[in-house]
Length: 249
Image (cartoon, rainbow, N blue to C red; front, side, top):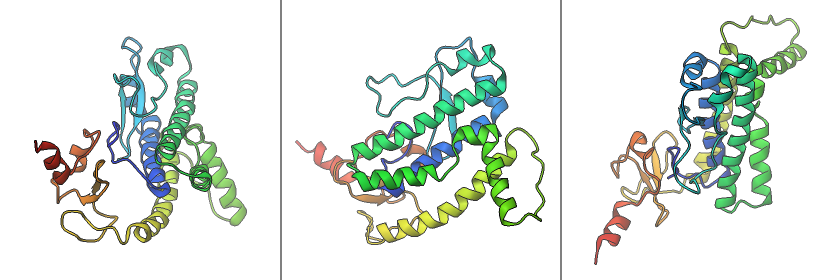
């Protein structure tokens, strides 16, 4: 398990899914939840970072105390720059650093689990097909999407943007929904033969699974009594069988 609350992704599809979850959380912070995000980035507080989690949530917090940290760390001290810049410029700056952090986390997993040249290229291509957080926050992603839509059908009307970043997030969610359907098909094919180490049933993409970091077997969360919320606090998961082996003298 990683410190940002998810099982360690081991395939290109899993790393990309992890990337998208973190990205969505950070986009929320910088668009639909921007007022709350702004308030949490108090310059009077210590060095703060913006974290995105695989479950599409975000958090403003102090950097990890571990040295070196389990995952690459996001930009430090984003709160200190808040009052010295125009808000839109500050949000754009945080967005750029967030994009860089997401890339570093994705390719950290790629290096850790031995992705070869083809895997790395495929991962980058999948990531590159998504607008960056910076493009979403500054509105350029919506502009590009509208231009493409206009080219395909010039008669379609363009809706006006309402609220800070709300239309951008709708666009991203629609785009990600289509990609999610493709990924589900790929994941089902890839894990179709994976069996739960506890009950022996097949893999299902709509259920929470967790991988043992010792024996590398996969388990239904419900079979080993691990919920997604509990999993967020587990750095290295050991299944009941491996835990029992370690406990024996």
